[in-house]
Each structure stands twice: as C-alpha cells, then as structure tokens.
Length: 303
Image 1 (cartoon, helix red, strand yellow):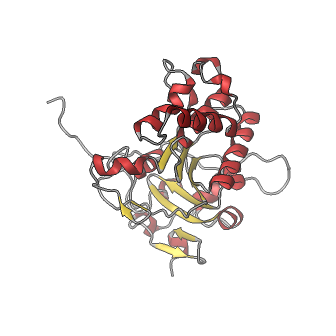
Image 2 (image 1 turned 90 degrees about the vertical axis):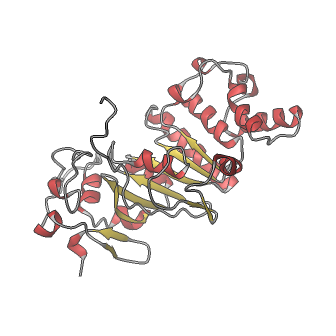
Image 3 (image 1 turned 135 degrees about the horizontal axis):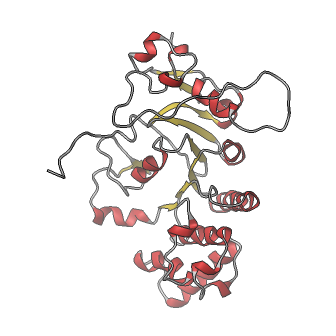
C-alpha cells in the first residue's frame, strides 16, 4: 500500500545534445529544471527510460555494467559541492588514486605515484596535500582535489555540475581559469551545467537553455547571448545584474516552475510567458532553425 505508484515525473523530455571533442556545451536553466538529471543520464548513473546516448559512436543505453566499465574512465563528473563529494574519511591521495586502482590504469605503484603527483601540480596543489584529509582544505582547494580525481583516469568528457556555485566569487574565477587551461592542454570536452550566464559567456562554445526538462533554445554562445529569441532566454539574460543604469526596465519572470507531477499542456513555459498565445497552451512548438547552429522551440517563429 505504501509503495504503490501514484504517478510518473518526466525530469527530462525530448532533450538532444551534441558535444564535439575539445568543446564546451553549457546547459543553462533554473534550479529544478532537469539539468543534473540529464548529466547523470549521459553518464549512466541513472538509467533513462527512453532515448539514445552515444559516446564515440557506441550506444550506452542498455549496456551491461561489465561492458560499460571500460568506458567509465572516458567520462567523469565534477559535482557541485566539494564539501559533500569527497569522502571525509579518506586522505587526498586515497581519493585520487581510487579510480586509478579500480580501472587498472597505472601498472606499478611508482607509475601511480608519479601520475598523482603530476595531477596535483596541474590543478595547483602540492604533493604534501596527499596525506591530509578534505576538511583541512578550503572550498576552492577541495574543488581542485575533485577535479584531480576526475582527471586521474584520463577522461575525454567531463560533466561539470555547477562546480563553482558553492565557492566565493574570487575562487570561482580561479576554478574557471583552471578548467579552461585543462581543456586547452588536454583536449577535454565539457558539459557545463550552470545557471550563471557570466560563466557561460566566459567558458562555453555552445549553449542549450532548458526549461522544465525541455531544451527551448540552443546555439552558439554568441548567437544565444547576443540575440536571444525564446522569451525564457530573454528573461534569464534580463535577470543578470548590471552596473550601468538607464534604458528600459528589464521584464523579469513572475511565478515558479510548474509542478513536475502535473506539467502544463503545450509549451511548458506558457504560464509565465508574457508573449503566450492560444497555440502555446495546446501544442509544444517544433524546432525552428534560425541559422546553421541556432535553433529555438517557440511558436513565435514557426512559419
């Protein structure tokens, strides 16, 4: 009786993303819109109920744990909160070497120690941190340790789940600079999950804007941020604090995300959209390509 199913929630619905080698795709949206769920589904940390997830041409959906295990080293994640993502009972050296040992990457203890020492230097830490525990470090240092842990298995794709949101502003800049340098030197691909538009502008090559589990606008960073077309994207950009004064007041959103258990029909944004039409309440809009890379799901642009 207490375990009966009373309904289903579509955390992510109809999302299509493509991340090229050495590039950064930013997934942007309000808290609770499904960004982290999408990232975990890509890594197969949660099983999607439908759809296809491909990595280097290999279909991951439905793959057994035994076959998926060799691919784990190529896909890693850096979590949002460095205070919660590191085991407080393990020393830093043990945290970083855990994946190396599990995936049999280093052949000898000497090679393993060399790899970890090089990683620490690369993320801006010294080797004397190996014997210390996570609670002995600041938030920024812990996030560097988490990044080193992800890089220890030589991944090609790193999913960054709001890795700077729990840090001070000055430390955020340091971590972003580190991620950018690591991408340049190692050729990493990033899926960068965030709600911070300033981070997107600095780090991302492409942007996908998510609302209530769906992508509503997608394109190059320059196109989406300079010429936003979806009313939700426009509202996100209008909400960014600005120093300069003057000009017309920004139109900010009212209300909250709709309930996941009873989502609105049609376009999920229509209850909060200042430009909503009757058709928005009935059908979800098809993708309209505004350019080769810029597309929007909005009835305002349907022919």
